[in-house]
Image 1 (cartoon, rainbow, N blue to C red):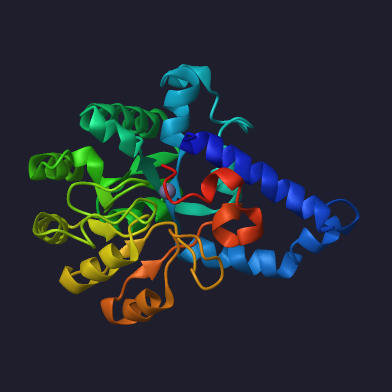
Image 2 (image 1 turned 120 degrees about the vertical axis):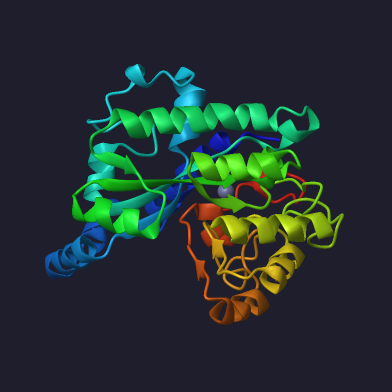
Length: 300
Ligand SMILES: [Zn+2]
């Protein structure tokens, strides 16, 4: 078992190594230099329509590196040890950012998931409120208003249904705090849904799991079906009354990692109206970039 942060570090290092090996870096660096005209066109488009990033791990990094002490970081400058900062969000023309509220799924065994989740909500809300460049968004209209004002709209995504500890009251409280999606599982199964990277126990969603999805529909939270098993994806698409999202998943046919999306599920998406947001962690893009420790289905 390795932490998610360690996993991201490993895969990022491998991606850099693979680029160098493939001759992408160094002498061929020009190949990565964008065409200035295309870049200008992209910036004009992103000025009109907000670019929405649905997954950013920064809140966990605040807690893991400095126990959530935001005075330890000057976020107006590039922070090489973190995955994001204001200059890079601006350079990337990010219009709206979903900040990930994440705790390891193993915490459910100790019944500390909800407690740990509150620390994540606390640090990300403190961060949003500490920066004039950021503003919390609760609706789609908020995103447009904040983007037009030149600020970055901030929304929260809960990465793992274990954090509600089987409590609809916790789900509703998360929504009140600003969560606008919840990933139904993370690496391990929850009592009411199977994860992609655990042994199947429920063959998808239980009846309680279906009620969780319906309550999310009622509240106005996306059901995020990244990380869940293919059966849980299909069950969710069968029961939801609103579009779902994959906040960070890629195509199984391209890279057969268990947490990527199989073709039959991709074919269900147009009717649902949902969106698959891709990620660029090496292991989920190419099997050649998968570290040995992530090949096991039992890894959490
Ligand atoms: Zn994830």
